[in-house]
Every structure is written in C-alpha cells, then in structure tokens.
Length: 495
Image 1 (cartoon, helix red, strand yellow):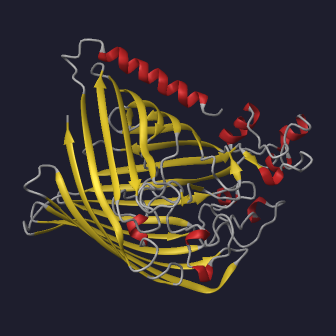
Image 2 (cartoon, rainbow, N blue to C red; image 1 turned 90 degrees about the vertical axis):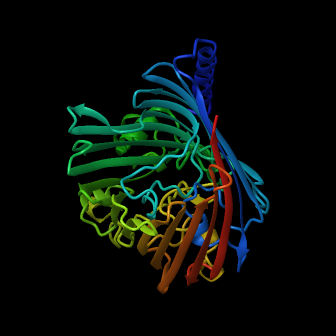
Image 3 (tube, one colour; image 1 turned 180 degrees about the vertical axis):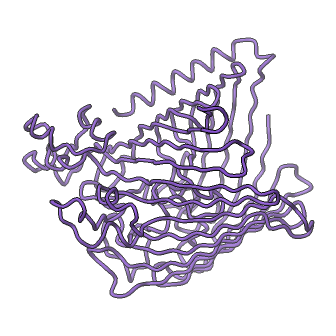
C-alpha cells in the first residue's frame, strides 16, 4: 500500500522503454520537446505573492516573492506501434527566496499508453472535473492549485466511444501518497477515482456531459493519538488494511464490520474510513457556427448529507464562450468565462448523527482525523478560494491547522484574446465574500477582490521564445493588500 507499487510500476515501464530503444525504430521514431523558463515575482508591494500570480499554477509559484524562478522540463515519447506508446517527462523549478524548498520536481512520470488508455507512475499534471481549464477558478475538490500528488494511475486520458460515436466514457483509478512532512498525519494515502459520460459526437451541435469524482485521504500515522488505548486509532496508526481499503473505495459505513469483527474497526472508522470528498458534475455544450457555449455545474459532497440534499446551494457554476471566428486582425476576443462558487451551506447549520438528513456542518476540507486538511505541501488541493489559515491576513488568522475560512461566495470573470498574431492576453477578476466556518464564524462577512492581467508576445528573433508579463492586485479583508508583477521568458523546442 505504500511506495513499492509506484516503484515497481516505474521500473517496469523503464525496462520496457530500454527494450524498445534496442529495436528497429525507423518506422516509429521517438520524439521529444523541452522548455526553459526564467521568471521573477519579486515585483511586489508586500511580502507575499499576489493571489492570481500563484493560484492554479500547480504549486510552483511560492506565496513569498522570488527574485528568480528557473524551471526546465523535457518530454520524450517512444512509439511502439500504431496503438502502443511509452512516454516520460521530468520538470523542475529552482526558487531563489523560498525558505522551505530551493528546488522541487514539479512533474516526473513514466507512462504506457494503449490507444486512449494509460498506466503511469509518478507526478503528472491532471485536471479533474467539468469546468474551464484556462480562465476559470478551478474545480471545487481537485484543482490545479497544488503540486501533483505522486501516484499510480490507470484509466483513459480521453473519452472513448462505447456505443457508436454518440456515447463516450472517461474514467480513472488512482492510488497515491501524500507528503511525509505534514504537521499532523504522516504517510497518508490517496484514493481517487472518477467516471464521466458524454452524449454526442465530435461534431454534434449539442453535447451532454455528466460524471462523478471521489477522493479519499486515508491511512497514515498521527503522533497525537499514539498514547490512546487503541480505540480512536491503533496507537497512532490509522486503518490501512485491505478491509479498510474496501471501505475507502465504497465510501460505505463500517458499522456492520465493527459488529462482525470486534476490535478490528477502530472508533474513527466506524462511520467511514478516511476523509471522503468529491463532486457530481454536469455539463452542456452547444456548438454554433461562430462560437461554442459550455455551461457546467459541480455539486460538492463531503459526507452523506449532500446525498440527501443534492439541491443544496453549495455548487460551482460556470459558462464559457469560445469564439471560432477572427474578425478583427488587430484585436481578437477568443474566450469569456463567467463563474459563481458558493460553499456556505455545507449541508445546513444542524448536525445530528442520528438523522442523516441533518448531518450538516460539513466543514469543507477539514477533518477530525486529518487535521492538516485537504492540502498538499501547504496548498489547497481544491478551489484556491478556500485558503489555508497560514496564508490569510494576520488579523483574521486563528492560528490553527487546516482551513478557518471555508464558507465563501465567489464571483469570477475571465477574458482572453490576442492582439495581432503574436501577442496574447488574459484578464481575471474575482470578488469574494467570506464567512469563516460554522464553528468559528467571522463577526461579519469579509470582502475580498483579486485581479490579474497577463500579456505575452512571441519574439521574432528567437523561434519558440515568449516574453510575458503580468500584474495582479489584491484588496480586502482576507488577504494582505498587494500589487505584484510577474516577468517571464520561456523557450520551447523539439528534438
């Protein structure tokens, strides 16, 4: 259940790649790409990096301004046949001013692909859920705000047809490992799975999407519980047996097993094993000749309460407009995204364990067992607008592990386009209302604004090179007021 399955998977794929390179590759030639990027976030009016300069960047931009960020990466693919491919990637970033980590491996994996199926081990960038991946806020539970978690993943990386060209499915199954440097639980594990269905062909004017994703923190060791009598945990160790894994996968109550196997199911796990959370996703895509519209909705769940109240107010809703025609060569608006997020309901203000319809106060991203919360290396794994307590303005911090402000409402607007052919631009504007938590509410709602503008241009004198700059601004009661800048040069190429 720990790192051996990941290591074995990587070694197996590695030896397969060596065997392939020894074969005749004249028909299926290997190919690769690379990138090198030098950037700075030191242009800041405070000792923190502005929100939209660091959010949804896969955890590579620290919350403290950096004089220099140097990142580089390589991707390499070896075709075995028309259907089989082995590919790998490695990327890292060096940070000049980060007191915790001067350098990190931001991505590194080895993957075996068959048609649209994949098996890989390592750390790979993924996007989970139905929403706009470019200009949006990010999915509710699994956004792109943190480093990818090391994992073994099996499933499809794209939709595959199961009934003609009208019914398509996409699914995955994951076993992963959280970092061992967590302040409360060490050696925690990740279980993750998802299944999505698409109705409509590649050229259909109307396409329906629906799916569900499920994530679980489980296993691990907490020093805090080491001295108990084994009732709450087994002297600090959480459930990590195959019986426990059965409960992790199903999400079902372990109460019947506690009766059938006295002493084998600890008190913490008699409800459910681990910290469960996920979303139910719906999407509608309408294709016109001149543009596409994509409407989406995510409904969050953390325990059984929202299964009884799927009409609950907590949801993430968005509409993306995608332009297909370029009418003005000087200025081009390519896409517009409008979104609204609410997490203030959380199944209601009541909690009665004996009544499943009143199991409210879900306390999103917090958990009594995993008290360091739904985060990875200090960054929220879900929507970046639920911010860890340590990142909040000092005047509103509660000096607690996890999240002390998880009841939020956010309105968001994103725009993107081009100026002439070589220059691209993005604009993000977000406004939030913050309520704290049910247990520790703020005395009044606290408002926050965060904005961002990026402009990038392709350099004529260096093929594949891009010079870009961004400015971001935060103002409000949740984050320190900050005006920050980002300057970057990026070179890409093939080999």
